[in-house]
Length: 203
Image 1: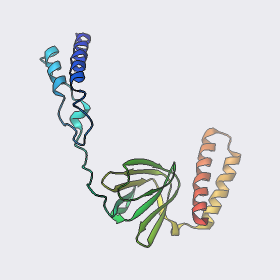
Image 2 (image 1 turned 120 degrees about the vertical axis):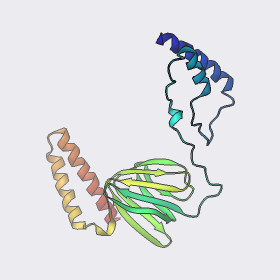
Image 3 (image 1 turned 45 degrees about the horizontal axis):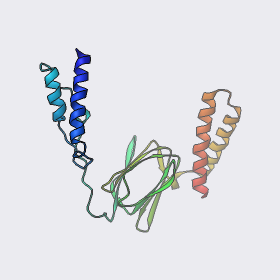
Image 4 (image 1 turned 60 degrees about the vertical axis):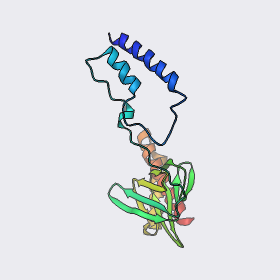
């Protein structure tokens, strides 16, 4: 019975889709109800069962895009244990994405970027605040809001160069002496992070 219902639903939905495909395109308004064609087809083959919920039932309308580009970028910078910046309006943020340094200005195209160990700089007028971030993600929205989530972050001026050099030497030695894949992976991560910190301090 289920196979028969599935076949009938597929035919009905396919027929309805072919008729309305040209009239239903992408838009900023996402319907929050179940497709009426699907509901009608379901009732024909299973009148005593409620139609299942589809992904579109849980979707909300997309936020509208501003008609003009804002003059400021709103930044939320969050760590697992603290909120460094909340609703901070700045001119620009430069983040260490895995694809390279990424400058983010107001009106930036919506993007999700993975972060690598490196410097994140926050530009507000002539003031520039720099943080060293270990990893994380940046979510850039169409309304000029940037949500940046990092696993670890510390102001660059709080990093002790001597400790960085010491850590880099220790992890380099561990990498050379590693005998298992796990030891090599842990040592490699340590080398990469400390190398990035060293480059941030000397650059």
